Length: 115
Length: 116
Image 1 (spheres, chains in turn red, green):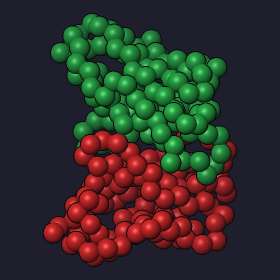
Image 2 (cartoon, chains in turn cyan, red; image 1 turned 90 degrees about the vertical axis):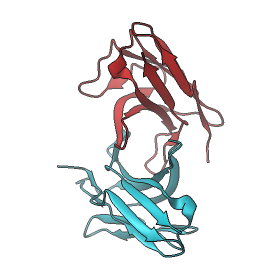
Image 3 (cartoon, helix red, strand yellow; image 1 turned 135 degrees about the vertical axis):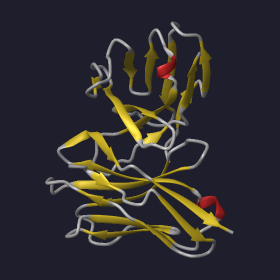
Image 4 (tube, helix red, strand yellow; image 1 turned 60 degrees about the vertical axis):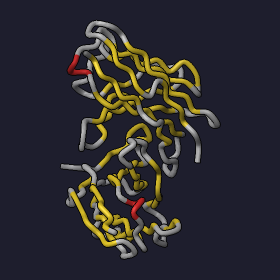
């Protein structure tokens, strides 16, 4: 089974609107961390936000927030007030507590922000 | 966030030559470094995990003799593509992290390799 699933290969959003990028995960480890990364066309991978499995509140970082639904094993990224510079690939990733030597990545979502 | 450098950013080489890519964590000591390969419009494919002072752990299907990884210090890891062939052309990305659940990976800017 896939550890991380991103079901949206591509998304469009109008500038200044909010957008949600989906991510579901699969793990039996009670301790895990979830990460979102942005990859612009330049190729660099940029860390956006982190959510720990024991965190009680949803993580937020500026315009990024993580909608963490533990029972549903989902960790959706919400980008508010989209900007043209948000156009990029977005990857969801997970790290498990029983193995720090591995990050599992989803297949990514290509976000296009329309002016 | 922490800074990871990767050099070179671009390399074009002839088939049969070897290419070395360096990955450095500039402002923190990385206990673990990862090497990824990425094809266009695809996700990152983990090639190997290297911990300082020990042999790298390669993912299934990755040739150890083809992709030599050395992690000599807490700030430097190198990937050498030996006897490169056109099918080795790809985007290679390294990352560095620490051994804690909440620690993100800090990625290098990547190296685009083109083998002619």
